[in-house]
Amino acid sequence: MVPPFPNKLPHSPVLQKAQEIFTLSRNISHYFVDDLAPLRADGTEDPDIYFSGDIVQQSESLAPEIMKAENHPFAEAKHRHAASVARLTNMLYRNCERLERSNTNGKEFVRLLRDELKKFRRLQRTWTLTL
Image 1: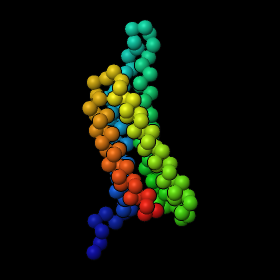
Image 2 (image 1 turned 90 degrees about the vertical axis):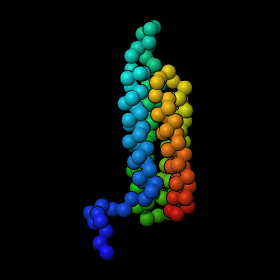
Image 3 (image 1 turned 45 degrees about the vertical axis):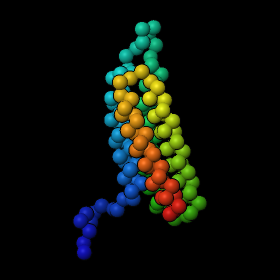
Image 4 (image 1 turned 30 degrees about the vertical axis):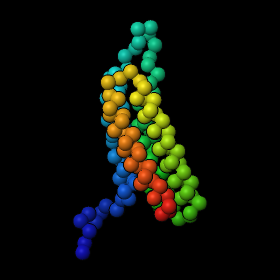
């Protein structure tokens, strides 16, 4: 039987979840920019705006690290990239916690991202064992 999409490579569930996390974090960041971009009454900017950019940057780095781990021929390099994925996931989770403490209206969206990160961590544990 011929696969339905012959030109596309099969993606692992971890890679698919990483792509979903990137899309969700990018949408959350766009939502937060409107709330956090205006200057405060004293003329300073809200420091929490940087956390919204950090979640996008960190989630964007997940998929390339996963692909490097899956495609590298040596086990040591695979585990190094898997450790990098674990670090990125932990930083993402911490930045989500920081965004939940910020003064915005979109805190429930950050909870959704944290739930997706929990699911990703479960997938990540089994994925790391299969490398």
